[in-house]
Length: 150
Image 1: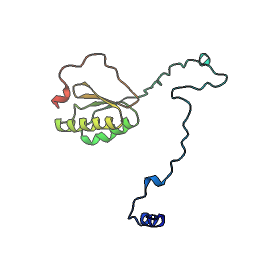
Image 2: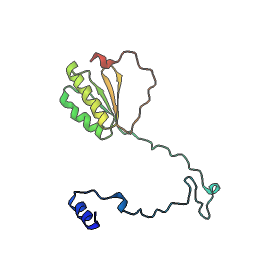
Image 3: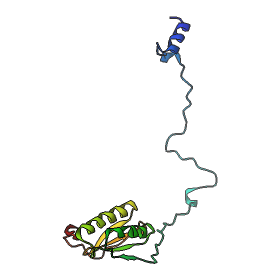
Image 4: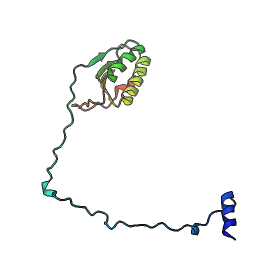
């Protein structure tokens, strides 16, 4: 088949171009083996100063919000405090069991969304901590969780 006819058929899409028609581009291989380091003038390993470990910034807490909601509609205020990085102690003693469960669901979703933590610290009392605050537990947890009683 002639070159002109082959080109026309390829342009129309009735024939695939031959792979052999193309020449390989010149490939230049890097002479430096992997893992070999280049030294720069005036620097040696002994001159490098060891890096001091970086300490995490200290978080200062200027306030903690104690919330005693009486209805589920108080959840917005709790969310506003936690969003502003204020830890919240949530006391659900004044809510019905149904509303307390809704508030627990809201608070756990809120802390998850803000990358905070949600901990039960007493009977129907919870600590909602923002992301920048970590809590340390001194006493082991009891075997029965109070979340199960809600």
